[in-house]
Image 1 (cartoon, rainbow, N blue to C red):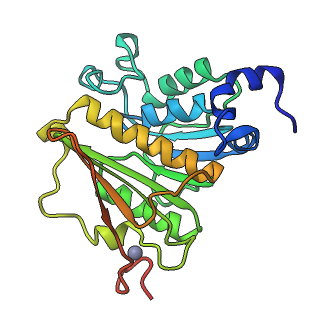
Image 2: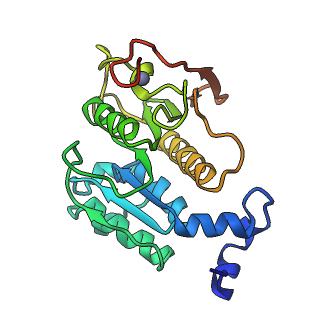
Length: 246
Ligand SMILES: [Zn+2]
């Protein structure tokens, strides 16, 4: 289907890029993603994807907006305090991109629920859900865009164990909950670091949808907010991985 004059106008800056162009925008309009977590990572990531024209963004989160979220969850305002995150974020997405469908799942996702997106975005903050999302992505042959942030640091990767031979899964990288695992509500996190990670998660998703560039499969980008210079490490599939190993 041809882009409407309104869509041509709205997406002009993406259409100008040879790696996206009109065909890339068409792919974005037809894409469905699931974002689990509507907080500091899921919120800005969802806003960039809605703005880019992604056709459907399924949102999962059971939390209500708390005043302490406003330091970094810039999708919310003072008026949102006490309201469901999913509902308020869906409102922001629809305001920016009225054609975006936003199924609202105002509950904590677990493996009993199916995800509607063909790409799964892990914007959660706990290992139990991360492991379950990784298993779901692997078992159903979907890409998992994964991000995390704590204190001054953050990390991003794309896991594709169910899509590409030899690609590692999240559990090849993190076999079990690390003993030193710390929650950002206990140790703090810098707002712009979560924004940088969220933006890169949106970027990786946009690349997967349009085929532009090389997705971060088998690579992990580590951001050190204090130093300012990110670095990348290579991840390999673990043959003994309980999820994707032989
Ligand atoms: Zn694995």
